[in-house]
Length: 323
Image (cartoon, one colour):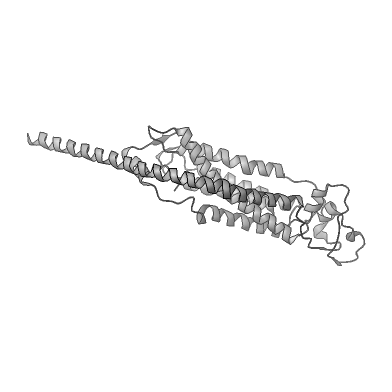
């Protein structure tokens, strides 16, 4: 009799706790829904009225710098400088390859990783939640990428440093008449072998854009994998480090080939690396997109149910968001 009474009391306590938890969750979700609705309406005005116009203006300025519509400074050169007299033989990592990997690669990378690790319960769609997480991650990534590109373009336009292939690409008029090691400040490119863009680009060496962008991309992905995917409890503890090594190798190849192709001086690559590292730190630490507290809804969901991710590589319990 006593045992039955105790069992009945325990069941009643569990029932009351369950009802209380569901009520608390409904209250929190209701408050969150109201707040989200207001923030969405408020945010749309700022997004379309302020953010998008500012972004378009920034991208337009970058394009004007890159195309030479906004005049770039010419730093001048020393006559017969051997450091500027290398032949132009093209790029190992072309601009087209760099930009395609910078834009498409991380998007695919985030989508696959989020699909594996995303937390969902019975009321949610895995694909939908994956798309949402991927969108916010990619937004943060693009945010830092634009900051990186803006810094590089402004520095290139202000410094105007000649490339190692300067004489071959530009064929400066003053370089044909100067003597010895005379410093030439004013010149005009006269090359007929290369298009006007290549001639203008011949004095935009500092800093290396290939390096800054590839270092940013490689380190961002490596950081993301460390925070999102790595855990000693995984069935494979080497998969994530190998992927991180691949990301770092991508950055190293893009950077070092700028020196071996004689497209940049070593100090151009060094400063480009510093810019890449700085913008990664800004994107993932200062902007606080990789560290935030879980909401009450997430806490309640985690109390009610857990989702175990089981694949050939992973067998663990992961939280709903990157932390």
